[in-house]
Structures are given as C-alpha cells and as structure tokens.
Length: 467
Ligand SMILES: Cc1cc2nc3c(=O)[nH]c(=O)nc-3n(C[C@H](O)[C@H](O)[C@H](O)COP(=O)(O)OP(=O)(O)OC[C@H]3O[C@@H](n4cnc5c(N)ncnc54)[C@H](O)[C@@H]3O)c2cc1C
Image 1 (cartoon, rainbow, N blue to C red):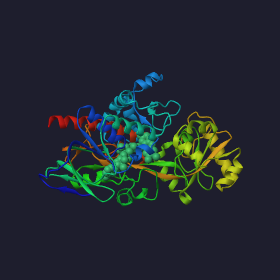
Image 2: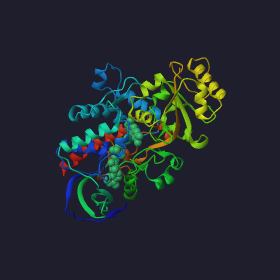
Image 3: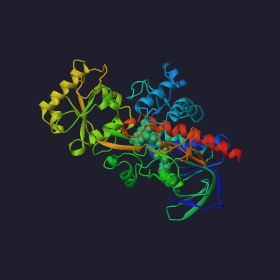
Image 4: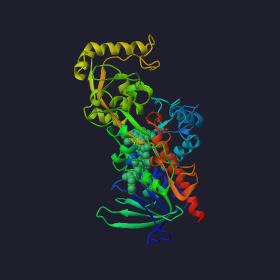
C-alpha cells in the first residue's frame, strides 16, 4: 500500500472529489459534496458495496432530534450525548471531536431522513449501556443493510458514479503531502490511475488484517471477527507513510455475545433486561452489563473460549426485534427451556451450580444482596421460565484507532497541521472510544461514519470551490 511521491504527476482521468469506500461514510460524504456542487467519484473494492455498514445493527445515536420529540422524548440534548461519550471512554477520547460529533449528530440524522428518506425512527423500548437517554435512531429491521441500500440508491439517484471492483492500492502525493491521485487495481490485474483535487478516505479500519492486529491489538487476534473482511487498514497504512498522526491504534469494539459457532450476535437486551452469562461450570464471571465491547475478552478468557448467555421470554421479545438476533433464532443458535435442570444438561454443567447462580442473580436483582461482580441489575424483574440459552464467544467487531482528524474531517499531521487536501472519516479515522476495548459507546461506529462523512463531504466541496 505505498504512497508514491511524484511531484507534478499528471493523470489522463481526474475528478475533483475522490472517495475511497462506499460504506456509510463514503456514500454520505459523496452525497454531501454533490449537494454543494462538487463532482464526485466513489471507488469501491467490492462488486457490491456492503462493508461493515451492511453488517451492522444500523442504530445511529443522535440527540435532540425532531424524531425524538415526535416520539415524546423531550429531554435529550447534544450535551447529554457528549457526556455519555466522555463517560464511556473515561474521558480519554478527543474531547473537541466528541463534542462536535455530538452537536452535529441531530443535524445529520434529520438531513438523511428529510433529504434522502433514510427510514429512521427512535428506539424507545431499549436503552444501551452508557446511554443516559434513548439516543438510538434505527430502521424498522434494525439492520444496517436496510440503511446502506437506501444510501447507495440515493447516490445512484443523484447520478454520483460508484466504480465497483476498484481496489485502491496506492496513493500519489507530492513532497508537501498534497494528494495527487490514486492507483486502482481491477480484478483482472489491470492498473488504472485517477487524479483528484481532494481525496476522502472512507475505507474503514484494520479488523480484517491479522498482521496489523498482531502488531497493534494482539489480544484481539484470536477473537472471532464479525466485521467485513475488506477492512484491511489501508487508510492507516497510507497515513503512516504520509506522516499523519495515528491515534488509539490499540482500541477496538468487541462483542461479548456472538453465537458459537454460528457467528451472529444476540440482541444486547438479553443482558440489559436482566440476563447473564455463565461459563462451562454454570458460574458467572463478570459484570455483563459494563458493555458488550469489553465483554468480548471476558468471554474469550473462559475455558474453551466460550460461555453461555441466559435470558427469559420478556428479554427475548425485546432482543428479537434486532435482525442479528432473529438470524440467531432462525439458525437454531438459541434454545428454550422450561426449567433450569435441562438447561444445565445442555450447557454440560452441574444443575445445582446453575441453580445457585440463578438464585444469586435473583437476589441481586431484587436488591437483597450486592452483586459479586458489582453489577446493578436496576429494577428489572427476576428472570422467569421459559428461559433462553445460547452458547457464545467473544468477537472483534471493528477497530477504533485511526487517522487523527479535525472538525472538518481533515487528516492531521503529527505536528497538528492538516494535510492540504486529505480527509478521512468513519472507521478510517480515530474513533471516540479512547485507547482500549472498554471505551466504545454503543452506536459510536455509525455516529462517526455518518457525521464525519457529511463533514468531510461538505469541507471537500468547499475546498474544490476555492480552487
Ligand atoms: C456486526 C456489526 C454490527 C454493528 N452494529 C452497529 C450499530 O448498530 N451501530 C453503530 O453505530 N455501529 C455498528 N457497527 C459499526 C459500524 O458498522 C461501522 O462503524 C460503520 O459501518 C463504518 O462505516 P464506514 O463507512 O467507515 O466503513 P464500511 O461500511 O466498512 O465501508 C468501507 C468500504 O470501503 C471499502 N474499501 C476498503 N478498502 C478499500 C480500498 N483499498 N479500495 C476501495 N475500497 C475499499 C470496503 O469494501 C467497504 O465497502 C457494527 C459493526 C458490525 C461489524
């Protein structure tokens, strides 16, 4: 993935704004730049754009939106969203970027709904850990593919070309760090060169690249990878070669309840509504409700690298609104039991041990005793039969480190100054999670992708206009 330094290089084909990647960030950047009159071309490696965006739960946090107000939620504010990001990341994210994204999120969601008919509504029946208000906006299926297909259709309707099967392998830059263009590899091995005035990197992180994981996040190498294999870390590699500032490179979002071996994750209402996780001995091992990201390594560190999630009918009704949970049901990854003893048999643990765990959880849920792992079960009802069980493993969802950007999504050099015409967003940019797996606030992935996409597209168009 080299950066080729050739001052004065010219190109037979040149576009004002070039976008690498057709996920949420790339499509939204293209729409925003196009709206402001810039000519845009998107280059996408896959034959059909999917990316992490299509794999995701499609839930986007925003605060103070008219959708929330229409649903009767009057007291959410960008400041509350900002405080939630800060609290989850222990204050170790970029505060200015977090504040800016929290402020912009409502505008981005409303713009996407009003202008491009993104089918979003508020998620009011379920609140993710760390969300002080129901910030989530989701499509009816709660599945990213639904949102992504609307975005790709909007791009096509606007007449913005997406060149698919166009794998960007190299960048051309001059000695001052100005991007001149890119080199593209086609499936038959043919190489093409395309020049640009502005380049937007929307090609996500390095979750699909084992070598980069070994180097930067060794603890995540053996986790099941539930993201898009095409996330090979190209943006970070180019950025490093250019001398960009790369931050929080050891950070990632995991998921602590991915069905084993099926590979789709359970709705997290299986935990937030009062469910819990046990290991092969029928014993709990963590505060499951701290967050699904940090739960990934806790599950992975259990004997056999697996655990079992247990919940009840009430939790099931809420969780089963989420596409991935429905898929888990359809694939037979979830089993239903009327009593604890047959459930223990299915897990392979001692029935008495599992009954004791149930009794401890019930006592903590009723507030009769402190939970051994410090979990606050809130005022959820005690689990009632029938119970639901799934064998689970810890997963890596996406990496959170990346290129440091400013409020316009311009990529910054190590000295803090921006490159003249290089932008990055979504998973290519540094996330909002701080340095580790515990800092991911649910929904930060799409919140970054949608907002930095819009900000990068707007700023790129302004730059092209200025000349
Ligand atoms: C299972 C799962 C569930 C998730 N659920 C949620 C959720 O509910 N809410 C949330 O906020 N986040 C969620 N996320 C995270 C979220 O999906 C991502 O943060 C977000 O989609 C990133 O968008 P993006 O545009 O940056 O990247 P992507 O959507 O991955 O798009 C990047 C595109 O770049 C292309 N590409 C890569 N390299 C090149 C190259 N060299 N040349 C050309 N093209 C290239 C890829 O093929 C891909 O199409 C989830 C992720 C997963 C995996």
